[in-house]
Amino acid sequence: MLSKTLIFLFFSSFSFSIVAAQNLTPTSFSQLVFNGEEFLGYDSFGYYYQIKNNVFSKIKETEIFEYKNVSLGKITKVDLQNPLKIVLFYEDFNTVILLDNQLNETSRINFSQNAEPIVATAVGMSSQNQLWVYNSLNQQIGLFDYLKNEYKTVSTPFAENIKYYQTDFNTFYWIDEKNNWFSCTIFGKTTTLGKIPRFDEVALLNSNQFLFSKANLLYLKDNRDVNSEAVSEIKISEKTFTKFRYKDQILSIFTPKEITNYKIVIP
Image (tube, rainbow, N blue to C red; front, side, top):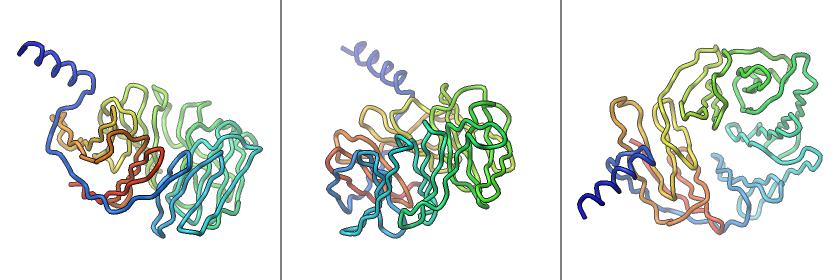
């Protein structure tokens, strides 16, 4: 019996590449009945965002704004960093749409029409009227000035394809297909940040910490201790969930029927 237990513990650790640490228990404070297909998160004004039937929506109580563009196909990525300038990326048509706070289209950028060839597979809002763009033609990160229609490459070519990416105004973060984690600044400085365990969903909090889910369990990992593989399980009430979002100490758990919001303090 003891040998079977040891084998199980070894297999579990190997499969998930995690070691248990102190658990975190967030506090649930609200629930929202949800009938969308994808929950995208909240902004600082209390609106939440969703996609349903490829319609992008902004909702707060009875107030609803919508944006739909059938001609550009499926929405690939939404960047909500600036709720006054929202980025919708339509990868199939190599196009970005910028929206104002009432979801009116303010700019349309077709990278196929750029003087320098660009095939974008990752896009996010950067600073100073620029967009982060990963150009799959040369496998490099660039910055696109959407007011001047100017593009400049800032990174060296990637060795591996991007598995996941996330951006803020000053940094492009990505995880490659070998689960290596990197960052690139607007000045082109690239840093190796460590290794990410195998995950179903992930959210990068900063250059050291990240949340990730695996097999309907949610974890926090801190890479500041490079010699430790320990992670903290985040104890939520949901036994199964589709996705999660984290922003400003609010953890939102998305199930097919509702959103549960938790207050959590990340140490």
